[in-house]
Length: 443
Figure 1 (cartoon, rainbow, N blue to C red):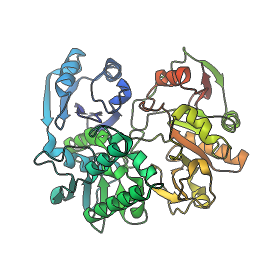
Figure 2 (cartoon, rainbow, N blue to C red):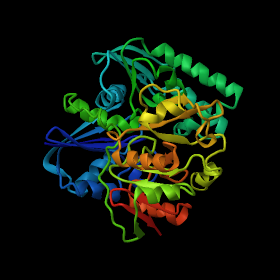
Figure 3 (tube, one colour):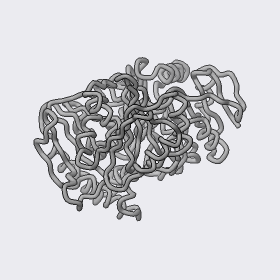
Figure 4 (cartoon, helix red, strand yellow):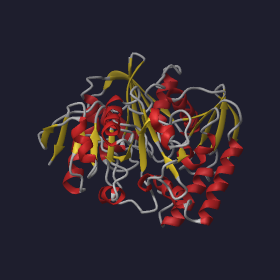
């Protein structure tokens, strides 16, 4: 039984299974290079076709504005639905349930499953913005509109259009550490979140779960946060529901995309070891491209840009590529076993969901209040990235690198080497490391 689930509204995604076994999950906009888009493209449809699967069942989820009709049309044109294949639709009333279902697959079920949604249309009747489930039944719901208000404030501060500012809320978080009025707004948001989240065993998801400042209040208590908390996880939630809640991706909840194709015909390529790459990282940014792409908003070592965080011009060198405001620091990736030497952390933080105070300040990866949104890296979590960090530590006596996502400003995370080629051609990226091939590529 081949099944595909597709979320066809903003932040669209696809999830595929075969005979009850998870195959892959991918964000649609990575293939159109239009942020938050859910429109099918030939690039994505051809990648699906490469799997040599025709689908027995297609599950479509959407809210209001949707490309679901186009998806069905294109799946048929690409001959991806079996002759007797069935098509099912889930509309907005199931939306929060599918957020919770996704979280159950990625981080596990708890006594309470909490969904605090971000972008949405709170004025439409029946569109709750905060929901608490217990045993798959709603035990609390409200329209505090925490996420919507945060988006509206973001739109106001940065002169953006309401309804399209949800991808810029991270700017408001960073700015709140510099502006007393915005800091007051952030603290009020945290109070509202705290009113929704019950005490005890909790799994927390929904767009607001990207607010790492608010999350950090919960990092040492029994609350699990879904790294696929935005609508880009909805198709995974649908799939978990369809498969009877049997998906368990807790060992690998983010590296879920298509396996990469390594066509190097556009590039110059050179044999490279980790030691070679570490030497370059001392002087300039290096991309790293390997394995299945990360799903979610952050580069976590498979599609990342790296540099020695201590370089006196680390921020400026990286910013030639990223074009980030000076008040928005970058984040560090650190070897898990050394994280507590540099940060006030107990345990691990592999998905950049929390901030921690830095014990030894490094300005390029540290906010004005001394905190960092860190990624801890273990050999089990990402072997190749771990080995690179370990090599850097052995040579340079520091177990961390500045790590940001492999993309240009305003672009989606690089999905394939065509995207990397574009970054090199037009975006000031000089080289990229392919650890699976032990090669550095340039143009």
